[in-house]
Image 1 (cartoon, one colour):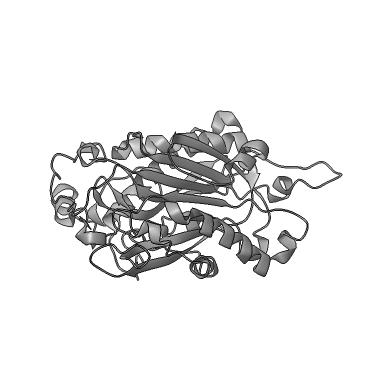
Image 2: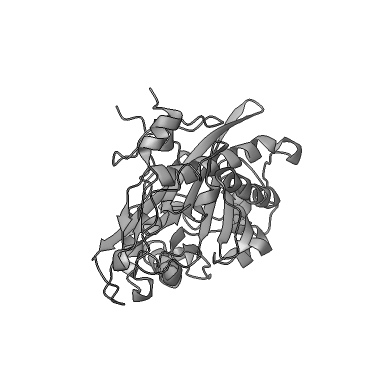
Length: 373
């Protein structure tokens, strides 16, 4: 039986396959989908080789869909908070989250120039599948982006509504593929191939066990800063180099989504989102000028209260602020591991104009940390 702590459903190794000593206790699949009701779907677009022809390719892109609740309940709001570590990027819907501390509908993540397609297609998908959700209300879905123009024809606008629908319709719970899939297809981190990554942690509190999961679209960092579990690995991994047949612009970002079933209030979820940069820093990310580092945290608890029933008091439960530290721990730990999973579950990728982003060398990981039994 496959242990999804060590490999993805498609058979790629995850960071734990190399005995990297992470902190904390992961959930069943070590994924954001360990939070009950959360599902993830991908559409991956890979086609063409050779010189860039805008509108034709090569294409190395896609879209990721995260459903915070099951499709039948997708219009029920979730309490949420967000934080921008560096604002050179976009995450739609955050003004409403800042105002009311909640959002509804699916989350999508894609490349920078397809953000609008992903957002608008989400509304069309909701109108087709849950029309009552928009019958007498508006929708402000959350959509995020990172830049994949070094490997992909980003100005060719290859993502379509159908691709977004496919990711939304294909969202599943359970183990997730990582690396060059979905919106992460054309992304890199520390000048190695990266993209989509996930991890989770169990958190005990007052005799109960809660789950916190993280999903990242990772596309940031300079090689010299790479750090793995406190080891300054950048100098040791100066090679293999990125092949720059065309200049590689400094356009780096990371979108992170934190989900939990713990009953946390909007201000507490904002506090979780503020801890995401600490997990990024554990890998060597420093939030450089060109980086869009934007983070969302949400809770699936207290759904009735988040919906705000009219004419009566809303009742909810919440973990007190004085007890929130273990959830900070879980956030930082899961962010760190999700980024490393995005790096490890990967392979070299050649994109437009022969540009190449190499994979993090697995033989170095074996020599440095060993293999898990």
